[in-house]
Image (tube, rainbow, N blue to C red; front, side):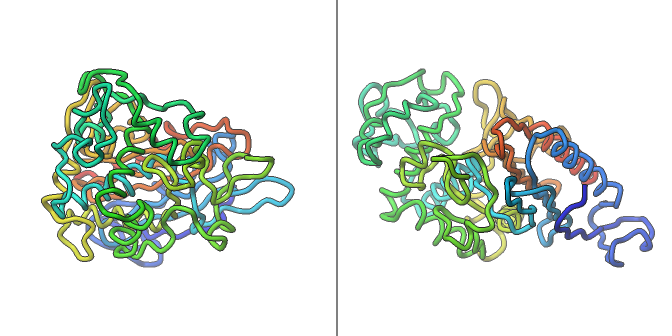
Length: 381
Protein backbone atom coordinates (compact mmCIF):
# COMPACT_ATOMS: atom_id res chain seq x y z
CA UNK A 1 0.00 0.00 0.00
CA UNK A 2 1.40 3.36 -1.00
CA UNK A 3 1.21 6.28 1.37
CA UNK A 4 -0.36 9.52 0.17
CA UNK A 5 1.95 11.88 2.03
CA UNK A 6 5.44 11.56 3.48
CA UNK A 7 8.02 13.55 5.29
CA UNK A 8 10.98 11.55 6.57
CA UNK A 9 14.32 12.86 7.84
CA UNK A 10 16.89 10.24 8.75
CA UNK A 11 19.09 11.05 11.71
CA UNK A 12 22.30 9.09 12.08
CA UNK A 13 24.89 8.32 14.73
CA UNK A 14 28.10 6.54 13.83
CA UNK A 15 26.85 5.26 10.47
CA UNK A 16 27.71 6.34 6.95
CA UNK A 17 26.34 9.56 5.54
CA UNK A 18 25.41 7.60 2.43
CA UNK A 19 22.62 5.90 4.36
CA UNK A 20 21.05 9.20 5.35
CA UNK A 21 17.93 10.51 3.66
CA UNK A 22 18.46 13.65 1.57
CA UNK A 23 22.02 13.81 2.89
CA UNK A 24 20.93 14.99 6.32
CA UNK A 25 22.67 13.63 9.40
CA UNK A 26 22.53 14.78 12.98
CA UNK A 27 24.23 13.49 16.11
CA UNK A 28 21.56 12.61 18.59
CA UNK A 29 19.56 9.62 17.37
CA UNK A 30 19.51 6.50 15.20
CA UNK A 31 16.64 6.39 12.72
CA UNK A 32 17.13 4.29 9.60
CA UNK A 33 15.18 3.40 6.49
CA UNK A 34 14.66 0.00 8.10
CA UNK A 35 12.96 1.67 11.07
CA UNK A 36 10.69 3.59 8.70
CA UNK A 37 9.90 0.42 6.80
CA UNK A 38 9.01 -1.37 10.05
CA UNK A 39 6.54 1.39 10.91
CA UNK A 40 5.07 1.12 7.41
CA UNK A 41 4.54 -2.61 7.82
CA UNK A 42 2.79 -2.25 11.17
CA UNK A 43 0.42 0.46 9.98
CA UNK A 44 -0.31 -1.03 6.58
CA UNK A 45 -1.05 -4.44 8.13
CA UNK A 46 -3.47 -2.74 10.53
CA UNK A 47 -5.27 -1.11 7.60
CA UNK A 48 -5.36 -4.40 5.71
CA UNK A 49 -6.82 -6.11 8.78
CA UNK A 50 -9.60 -3.52 8.98
CA UNK A 51 -8.40 -1.98 12.24
CA UNK A 52 -8.60 1.53 10.78
CA UNK A 53 -9.26 3.28 7.50
CA UNK A 54 -6.04 5.27 7.71
CA UNK A 55 -3.56 6.90 10.04
CA UNK A 56 -0.90 9.56 10.45
CA UNK A 57 2.28 8.66 12.35
CA UNK A 58 4.75 11.28 13.56
CA UNK A 59 7.97 11.06 15.55
CA UNK A 60 9.79 14.17 16.75
CA UNK A 61 12.61 15.19 19.02
CA UNK A 62 12.57 18.45 20.94
CA UNK A 63 13.57 20.54 17.93
CA UNK A 64 12.32 18.89 14.76
CA UNK A 65 10.10 16.28 13.16
CA UNK A 66 12.00 13.08 12.36
CA UNK A 67 9.28 11.03 10.69
CA UNK A 68 5.83 12.04 9.45
CA UNK A 69 3.71 9.90 7.17
CA UNK A 70 0.08 9.41 6.19
CA UNK A 71 -1.48 6.06 5.33
CA UNK A 72 -4.77 4.87 3.89
CA UNK A 73 -7.90 7.00 3.72
CA UNK A 74 -9.66 9.52 5.94
CA UNK A 75 -13.01 8.83 4.26
CA UNK A 76 -14.29 5.65 2.65
CA UNK A 77 -17.47 5.68 0.60
CA UNK A 78 -18.81 6.59 -2.79
CA UNK A 79 -16.25 9.38 -2.77
CA UNK A 80 -13.14 8.33 -0.85
CA UNK A 81 -10.46 10.73 0.35
CA UNK A 82 -6.83 9.82 0.95
CA UNK A 83 -5.28 10.48 4.33
CA UNK A 84 -2.89 13.45 4.38
CA UNK A 85 -0.40 14.54 7.01
CA UNK A 86 -2.51 17.63 7.77
CA UNK A 87 -5.73 15.67 8.37
CA UNK A 88 -7.71 16.86 11.39
CA UNK A 89 -8.66 14.22 13.99
CA UNK A 90 -11.17 13.96 16.80
CA UNK A 91 -8.74 13.41 19.69
CA UNK A 92 -11.42 12.04 22.06
CA UNK A 93 -9.83 11.53 25.50
CA UNK A 94 -6.54 13.17 24.57
CA UNK A 95 -8.66 16.24 25.31
CA UNK A 96 -8.21 15.38 28.98
CA UNK A 97 -4.46 16.03 29.29
CA UNK A 98 -3.83 18.43 26.40
CA UNK A 99 -6.72 20.85 26.96
CA UNK A 100 -8.21 20.26 30.40
CA UNK A 101 -5.37 19.15 32.68
CA UNK A 102 -2.91 21.56 31.07
CA UNK A 103 -5.43 24.38 31.62
CA UNK A 104 -5.79 23.33 35.26
CA UNK A 105 -2.02 23.36 35.67
CA UNK A 106 -1.81 26.80 34.07
CA UNK A 107 -4.23 28.04 36.72
CA UNK A 108 -2.13 26.28 39.37
CA UNK A 109 0.88 28.20 38.11
CA UNK A 110 -1.12 31.41 38.42
CA UNK A 111 -1.92 30.38 42.01
CA UNK A 112 -5.63 30.49 41.23
CA UNK A 113 -6.04 26.76 41.94
CA UNK A 114 -4.49 24.48 44.55
CA UNK A 115 -4.72 20.85 43.48
CA UNK A 116 -4.71 19.75 47.13
CA UNK A 117 -7.93 21.66 47.83
CA UNK A 118 -11.45 20.21 47.49
CA UNK A 119 -13.21 20.79 44.19
CA UNK A 120 -16.18 22.16 46.14
CA UNK A 121 -14.06 25.09 47.34
CA UNK A 122 -14.17 26.40 43.77
CA UNK A 123 -17.49 24.84 42.72
CA UNK A 124 -19.75 25.12 45.81
CA UNK A 125 -22.62 23.30 44.10
CA UNK A 126 -20.43 20.22 43.70
CA UNK A 127 -21.14 18.75 47.11
CA UNK A 128 -23.42 16.34 48.85
CA UNK A 129 -23.26 12.54 48.92
CA UNK A 130 -19.62 12.71 50.01
CA UNK A 131 -18.37 14.70 47.02
CA UNK A 132 -17.48 17.81 49.02
CA UNK A 133 -14.18 16.21 50.11
CA UNK A 134 -12.95 15.17 46.64
CA UNK A 135 -9.66 16.88 45.85
CA UNK A 136 -8.74 18.37 42.48
CA UNK A 137 -5.66 16.13 42.43
CA UNK A 138 -7.89 13.07 42.80
CA UNK A 139 -9.93 14.01 39.75
CA UNK A 140 -6.72 14.49 37.78
CA UNK A 141 -5.65 10.97 38.82
CA UNK A 142 -9.10 9.34 38.42
CA UNK A 143 -9.16 8.35 42.09
CA UNK A 144 -11.91 10.68 43.30
CA UNK A 145 -14.53 7.95 43.51
CA UNK A 146 -16.80 9.33 40.79
CA UNK A 147 -18.66 7.07 38.38
CA UNK A 148 -16.92 6.65 34.99
CA UNK A 149 -19.99 7.85 33.04
CA UNK A 150 -23.42 8.90 34.22
CA UNK A 151 -26.51 8.19 32.13
CA UNK A 152 -26.72 9.74 28.68
CA UNK A 153 -30.25 10.79 29.62
CA UNK A 154 -28.73 13.28 32.05
CA UNK A 155 -27.36 15.25 29.09
CA UNK A 156 -30.35 15.27 26.77
CA UNK A 157 -31.94 18.47 28.09
CA UNK A 158 -28.91 20.69 27.69
CA UNK A 159 -25.65 21.59 29.47
CA UNK A 160 -27.22 23.38 32.46
CA UNK A 161 -29.36 20.46 33.52
CA UNK A 162 -26.49 18.07 32.76
CA UNK A 163 -24.32 19.96 35.25
CA UNK A 164 -27.09 19.83 37.84
CA UNK A 165 -27.33 16.05 37.40
CA UNK A 166 -23.57 15.69 37.83
CA UNK A 167 -23.69 17.72 41.04
CA UNK A 168 -26.44 15.38 42.31
CA UNK A 169 -24.36 12.24 41.76
CA UNK A 170 -23.25 10.07 44.64
CA UNK A 171 -19.93 8.34 45.08
CA UNK A 172 -19.07 5.05 43.39
CA UNK A 173 -16.13 4.40 45.72
CA UNK A 174 -14.34 6.04 48.61
CA UNK A 175 -11.80 8.69 47.70
CA UNK A 176 -8.46 7.13 46.78
CA UNK A 177 -9.78 3.58 47.15
CA UNK A 178 -10.06 2.74 43.46
CA UNK A 179 -8.69 3.89 40.13
CA UNK A 180 -11.79 4.42 37.99
CA UNK A 181 -11.16 6.16 34.69
CA UNK A 182 -13.85 8.84 34.81
CA UNK A 183 -15.15 11.07 32.05
CA UNK A 184 -17.38 12.66 34.68
CA UNK A 185 -14.34 13.73 36.68
CA UNK A 186 -12.90 15.58 33.70
CA UNK A 187 -16.22 17.20 32.86
CA UNK A 188 -16.03 18.59 36.40
CA UNK A 189 -12.44 19.76 35.79
CA UNK A 190 -13.56 21.50 32.60
CA UNK A 191 -16.23 23.32 34.59
CA UNK A 192 -13.56 24.21 37.17
CA UNK A 193 -11.41 25.88 34.50
CA UNK A 194 -14.44 27.81 33.27
CA UNK A 195 -15.46 28.97 36.74
CA UNK A 196 -12.00 30.01 37.94
CA UNK A 197 -10.81 31.64 34.72
CA UNK A 198 -14.08 33.25 33.66
CA UNK A 199 -13.59 31.82 30.15
CA UNK A 200 -14.89 28.72 28.43
CA UNK A 201 -12.48 25.78 28.30
CA UNK A 202 -12.33 26.38 24.55
CA UNK A 203 -11.26 30.02 24.91
CA UNK A 204 -8.91 29.46 27.84
CA UNK A 205 -7.03 26.54 26.28
CA UNK A 206 -6.78 28.37 22.96
CA UNK A 207 -5.49 31.60 24.52
CA UNK A 208 -3.12 30.08 27.08
CA UNK A 209 -1.90 26.92 25.31
CA UNK A 210 -2.62 26.63 21.60
CA UNK A 211 -2.05 30.20 20.39
CA UNK A 212 1.31 30.61 22.19
CA UNK A 213 2.52 27.35 20.65
CA UNK A 214 1.22 28.26 17.17
CA UNK A 215 -1.12 25.25 17.26
CA UNK A 216 -3.36 26.92 14.70
CA UNK A 217 -5.41 23.83 13.88
CA UNK A 218 -6.18 22.72 17.43
CA UNK A 219 -9.37 23.45 19.32
CA UNK A 220 -13.00 22.62 19.94
CA UNK A 221 -15.73 23.11 17.32
CA UNK A 222 -13.52 23.27 14.20
CA UNK A 223 -14.60 25.63 11.45
CA UNK A 224 -15.83 24.52 8.03
CA UNK A 225 -12.40 24.73 6.43
CA UNK A 226 -10.93 22.36 9.01
CA UNK A 227 -13.93 20.05 8.85
CA UNK A 228 -13.34 19.52 5.15
CA UNK A 229 -9.97 17.89 5.89
CA UNK A 230 -11.05 15.93 8.96
CA UNK A 231 -11.06 12.16 9.33
CA UNK A 232 -14.50 10.56 9.42
CA UNK A 233 -15.57 8.46 12.39
CA UNK A 234 -19.07 6.95 12.45
CA UNK A 235 -22.50 8.11 11.31
CA UNK A 236 -24.85 10.35 13.25
CA UNK A 237 -28.28 11.09 11.78
CA UNK A 238 -27.27 9.11 8.69
CA UNK A 239 -24.22 11.27 7.91
CA UNK A 240 -20.55 10.76 8.58
CA UNK A 241 -19.21 12.69 11.55
CA UNK A 242 -16.37 14.90 10.28
CA UNK A 243 -15.16 17.69 12.50
CA UNK A 244 -18.06 16.86 14.81
CA UNK A 245 -17.24 15.28 18.15
CA UNK A 246 -17.97 11.56 18.29
CA UNK A 247 -18.39 11.31 22.07
CA UNK A 248 -22.15 11.52 22.72
CA UNK A 249 -21.89 13.39 26.03
CA UNK A 250 -19.51 15.98 24.64
CA UNK A 251 -21.83 16.37 21.66
CA UNK A 252 -24.84 17.01 23.91
CA UNK A 253 -22.75 19.50 25.91
CA UNK A 254 -22.34 21.56 22.74
CA UNK A 255 -19.00 20.12 21.63
CA UNK A 256 -16.93 21.65 24.45
CA UNK A 257 -16.25 19.40 27.43
CA UNK A 258 -13.40 18.52 29.74
CA UNK A 259 -13.27 14.87 28.73
CA UNK A 260 -13.63 15.03 24.92
CA UNK A 261 -14.21 17.40 22.02
CA UNK A 262 -10.71 18.58 21.09
CA UNK A 263 -9.55 18.32 17.47
CA UNK A 264 -5.99 18.57 16.20
CA UNK A 265 -3.41 17.47 13.65
CA UNK A 266 -0.25 15.43 14.13
CA UNK A 267 1.99 18.44 13.55
CA UNK A 268 0.14 20.54 16.12
CA UNK A 269 0.43 17.77 18.70
CA UNK A 270 4.13 17.57 17.93
CA UNK A 271 4.42 21.26 18.84
CA UNK A 272 2.71 20.55 22.15
CA UNK A 273 4.94 17.54 22.81
CA UNK A 274 8.09 19.45 21.96
CA UNK A 275 7.15 22.20 24.40
CA UNK A 276 6.85 19.51 27.08
CA UNK A 277 10.25 18.05 26.16
CA UNK A 278 11.78 21.43 26.97
CA UNK A 279 10.37 21.06 30.51
CA UNK A 280 9.17 24.64 30.72
CA UNK A 281 12.63 26.04 29.91
CA UNK A 282 11.88 27.40 26.43
CA UNK A 283 9.62 30.24 25.34
CA UNK A 284 6.82 30.33 24.60
CA UNK A 285 6.03 28.49 27.81
CA UNK A 286 2.89 26.46 28.38
CA UNK A 287 4.00 26.16 31.98
CA UNK A 288 7.19 26.81 33.93
CA UNK A 289 9.60 24.08 35.02
CA UNK A 290 8.16 23.75 38.51
CA UNK A 291 4.60 23.34 37.21
CA UNK A 292 5.77 20.91 34.53
CA UNK A 293 7.44 18.70 37.14
CA UNK A 294 4.32 18.83 39.31
CA UNK A 295 2.19 17.70 36.38
CA UNK A 296 4.31 14.83 35.07
CA UNK A 297 5.50 13.31 38.36
CA UNK A 298 4.30 9.68 38.49
CA UNK A 299 1.92 9.03 41.38
CA UNK A 300 0.80 5.67 42.67
CA UNK A 301 -2.84 4.82 42.16
CA UNK A 302 -4.58 1.47 42.63
CA UNK A 303 -3.41 -0.75 39.74
CA UNK A 304 -0.52 1.40 38.61
CA UNK A 305 0.80 4.93 38.28
CA UNK A 306 -0.63 8.08 36.70
CA UNK A 307 0.40 11.71 36.47
CA UNK A 308 -1.88 14.74 36.64
CA UNK A 309 -4.04 14.24 33.56
CA UNK A 310 -1.73 11.73 31.86
CA UNK A 311 -1.32 7.99 31.80
CA UNK A 312 1.99 6.56 33.00
CA UNK A 313 1.79 2.83 33.80
CA UNK A 314 -1.81 1.70 34.23
CA UNK A 315 -4.33 -0.73 32.73
CA UNK A 316 -4.72 1.83 29.91
CA UNK A 317 -1.04 1.77 28.90
CA UNK A 318 -0.97 -0.87 26.16
CA UNK A 319 -0.39 1.89 23.61
CA UNK A 320 2.88 3.02 25.29
CA UNK A 321 4.79 -0.09 24.25
CA UNK A 322 7.58 -1.57 26.36
CA UNK A 323 10.70 0.51 25.71
CA UNK A 324 9.84 4.08 26.66
CA UNK A 325 11.53 5.41 29.78
CA UNK A 326 10.05 5.74 33.25
CA UNK A 327 9.64 9.45 32.57
CA UNK A 328 7.30 8.88 29.62
CA UNK A 329 3.71 10.04 29.92
CA UNK A 330 0.91 9.87 27.39
CA UNK A 331 -2.73 9.19 26.64
CA UNK A 332 -5.03 7.51 24.18
CA UNK A 333 -8.40 8.39 22.73
CA UNK A 334 -11.43 6.24 21.91
CA UNK A 335 -11.39 7.28 18.26
CA UNK A 336 -7.96 5.72 17.73
CA UNK A 337 -5.57 8.45 18.82
CA UNK A 338 -2.34 8.13 20.83
CA UNK A 339 0.20 10.62 22.15
CA UNK A 340 3.31 9.73 24.21
CA UNK A 341 6.01 12.14 25.33
CA UNK A 342 9.31 10.87 26.74
CA UNK A 343 11.50 13.61 28.26
CA UNK A 344 14.31 11.18 29.13
CA UNK A 345 14.68 9.90 25.57
CA UNK A 346 13.70 13.24 24.06
CA UNK A 347 10.96 11.96 21.78
CA UNK A 348 7.34 12.67 20.92
CA UNK A 349 5.23 9.89 19.40
CA UNK A 350 1.94 10.79 17.72
CA UNK A 351 -0.38 8.15 16.26
CA UNK A 352 -3.67 9.45 14.88
CA UNK A 353 -6.05 7.00 13.24
CA UNK A 354 -9.70 6.66 12.39
CA UNK A 355 -10.34 3.25 13.92
CA UNK A 356 -14.12 3.81 14.03
CA UNK A 357 -14.40 4.38 10.28
CA UNK A 358 -16.32 2.93 8.61
CA UNK A 359 -17.75 0.13 10.78
CA UNK A 360 -16.82 1.10 14.37
CA UNK A 361 -14.94 -2.16 14.90
CA UNK A 362 -11.27 -1.23 14.65
CA UNK A 363 -8.72 -1.59 17.44
CA UNK A 364 -5.36 0.18 17.44
CA UNK A 365 -3.89 0.32 20.95
CA UNK A 366 -1.66 -2.74 20.57
CA UNK A 367 -0.67 -1.61 17.08
CA UNK A 368 0.35 1.83 18.38
CA UNK A 369 2.19 0.10 21.23
CA UNK A 370 4.29 -1.83 18.71
CA UNK A 371 5.34 1.40 17.04
CA UNK A 372 6.10 3.01 20.41
CA UNK A 373 8.27 0.00 21.30
CA UNK A 374 10.17 0.33 18.03
CA UNK A 375 10.73 4.05 18.59
CA UNK A 376 11.91 3.47 22.15
CA UNK A 377 14.39 0.85 20.97
CA UNK A 378 16.09 3.25 18.56
CA UNK A 379 16.28 5.99 21.20
CA UNK A 380 18.44 4.14 23.76
CA UNK A 381 19.25 6.96 26.19
